[in-house]
Image (cartoon, rainbow, N blue to C red; front, side):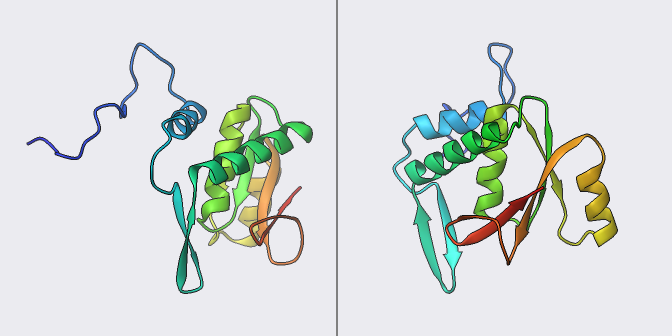
Length: 144
């Protein structure tokens, strides 16, 4: 049975003809210039549209920031935070610089969180906080 709204231009499997990475998938999506918003973010009881240009600019700024602090290809970078737009954009930025995102679940114990950030070859850890750190659209993130 064929799916009527399936876009044959969107590859869903790895092909022998090209390399598929998270960074390339992100760049391809941005270059397509989709007509609708890239994301919808809940703010209180309302939903805010995030355009592809806004998301692309945020990913580019995050990637440049990662490069500025010395993150490089092959580095592993832990992410501790609830699933939200900032987490997704940060993960795409890691992909653009060739680093690897390694999530830490919010329901992990404090000991597991510390261990995950300090072992397994992690270069750094990005943590959602309510106190301090860099801010993007009102959310605070701290790296250490």
